[in-house]
Image 1: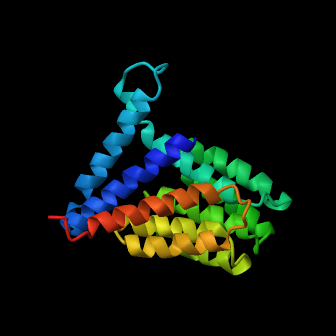
Image 2: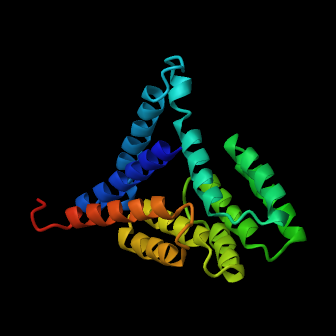
Length: 214
């Protein structure tokens, strides 16, 4: 799982830094994004020697990427008893690419527990996945509600930062992730991953805006 998270993160970073360095207009962002998607597909194929060589298998990398992002969110959950049932059902649907169903299952939980921060945070993630990584207004609302119930919860800050990175706003990403790190307890499961990602982000930003860059 850790390798996939690193590959996904680095692919996103490379895409974002390419956009920043080249100062590409929004209508040309599809090029580096496509390169990143192809890199993920290639890793999915090369990293699974037991899988037959076929186009259908390589394009499944996007589904695997979604699974890894869900895994990141799971490590940030506190596993509150009342939310766990809905989270498990929703995550199972999302791993099959059924994001609308996943969101509906979470909404069922929120009908019963309208102030549950984990359910709201998970809903924001599912809505982002359904929107191909974009922070849609419904996803933003879900994260806002999660943050209101759990001000120091990491999910809103982490995934809003990820959405900002998709948009090429790396400085904003750093702010979100630094806040999530500052709110993390010393033994938080996600803390080491977040520390590494922040370090990589800062290094790439420094290189992107270095005076030595052409």
